Structures are given as structure tokens and as C-alpha cells.
Length: 422
Image (cartoon, rainbow, N blue to C red; front, top):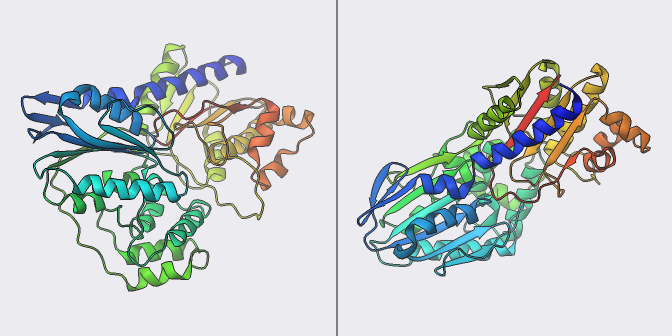
């Protein structure tokens, strides 16, 4: 593939991936009404007394819009908690904006409102939870004995400590009153159903947004182990470690209500592969998700790249920041800069690393789309790519080389999409 045609095809594949997990459409596909019953993800629940909606996460607006379209006359109340404001799709659905990527005071207000929604209403009203990635920070209520500042500090340590999202959520859920089935506990015995759009790599449904309706069976000891294994025990407030050492597992709510994952990174990768095929490009979806450190993963996928086929990866990597004043960027831009260095050595190839939510780390870019000429374009602008990599400032170099991908928030989150041809 010529570099220009490859770049165009990669962007088209990214757009196709986003269309395939459109939250409004996939929610509509997994809901149906029959009399006073509602079919949720293929399972039937009673909804004769009406439905309350709790939509939380980066896909909350789209999921709520899809559900409201179908349930308009049955809606008796609800709440949309997202990372950005949009007009409500229904007069009975209130919109709140939480904080991301770290819980803030807006997240606390949203979390309290979510717990109230779960507790309020007629005992026979159905609570329909629409859960997507990002919900872990967008709504939050600290566990008893943990201050909100403690919680925020622990969250920052986890995000910058190179902790995979699945293990990150183990810690988050045990410092929270709302995660790990907190909404289910607050709802008591009233009917409940959950649809999920997953940003979790190879994890259970309970891992999405740290499981507000689904407990996972982990313990405070498991949370302590994560902090110890990633050498974060001294980076979180001492009160957090003290709480985890003294707390006991809360009673887990019984997971008997219907729930289903309706979109994920695997579906996005499949759609990208199909789109590349429509451009006449041979493509293969790699079965194993791309995980772990972004630098090592980027080197590995470039090493495996071939000239006559695009390898499509899905998953989510991490970056452990170990400098005091890092620059701008995110895991996909960091990986793209690493890949650009390797492609320059080979003298050929293209790499695209895209966040499906359109927000890659501490930047307004979705990721980077680089080729073997990226490093030289950066050098022509007076920039040393290795220095930018060392300072975690991939954004600046990719901006100078013309290799940033900027979409704005996409309204969905199913992890990351990587495309590579060598």
C-alpha cells in the first residue's frame, strides 16, 4: 500500500468501527416491548409499572436516546450521567455531567443522584441500567470512612501508575459505595435489568464502569494486592491503605437480574477489518487483545507487521509516567510515536492508534496515525522524537508532523483500535 492510500483507509476503518458500536442503534436492537413486558438483551422482565433509566458512561447519551425512543410512554423518570452535556432525549430524563478521568465534585453529586434514583419510586417499577466505559469516574460516592479527596488521590495514582484497567477497577470498587453492585443494593428487590457497552479487555460484564449493578466477587485484600504489586502503596493516601486493611467485604447482591454486553472492542475491530476489505486491502483481526505497556506493545505489533496485510488489534494499553512534569499525549499517541521510530528504521509502513472515545489521555486528540516518514517530518520541525518520548510529550511531535487524529468526543467507548501494516 502507498502511504497516502493506507492512511485514508485506516481513517475510514476507524470511522466504520465507531459506526458499528453506535450506542443508540445497538441499544435499540437489544430492547423490545411486548404488552407490559420488556425484553432486555433477550430476557423478559415486567415493566407494567413503568421504567426508570439510569444511563452512565461515555455512551450514556446515545444509549438513553435509543431506550427513550422505544420506551417513551413508559418512562417515569431517569438520569443520564455523561462526560459532556447534550439535550435530554426525553423530558423525564435528567442530564448530569460528571468528572473524567478523575472523579470530582460533579461526580459526587451525580453519584448521590444515582443512588437516590435507585431507591426511589414504586417497588414494581423497572430500573433499566445502561452502563458504559467511563462510568467509574463520572459518578462516585466514597465508601464510609474514605474522604472524597482520598478517593481522588488514589484515582490519580492508579491512572498514572501503569495499572491495567481491570486491576484499576478492583481498587476503585472497594473504595466506593456505588461500585461493585452498589446500585443493586440500593434498589433492594425492585426489578432491574442492565445493558452494557464494554471498554474492558477480556473481562466480565461486572468490570464495566466498576460494576454499579454487578458485583465481581473481589475483596479488599485483592485491592491491597494491586496497590502493592504496582508499587503504589506509598503513592495513595495512608487512609486508603488503612481502610482496605480494616474493611470487610460488603454483602454481594445476587446477580439474578438480566444483563448483557451489547457492544465491545471485538465488534469494532471486526467492522474495521470489513471496511479495509471494502477498500481492497487484505486485513486480519488479531485474536489476542493488545494490552500491557504501550511502548512494548507498539514495538511488538510493528515487529509482526507485514507489507501486504493490515493487522487489526483491539484492547487497551497503559503508560506509566515517571517524570515530574510530563507533556501532553495519551497511550495511543505514545504508542504511535514508538511505532513511528520503528517504521523509520524499516523504511516503510503505517500505524494508527485510536481511542474509540475520541479522547486519548491528557489531550484533545483521539490518537496518532503515523508512517515511516513521521520521524523525519518531526526532525524537520526541529524536534527530537526520543526526547518527546522520554518526556511523554507525543502530542507536540505528532502535531508538528501532521499525524494527530482529532475527532472530539465520539459518544462511545470500547477501548482502543490499532491498525498496522509494515
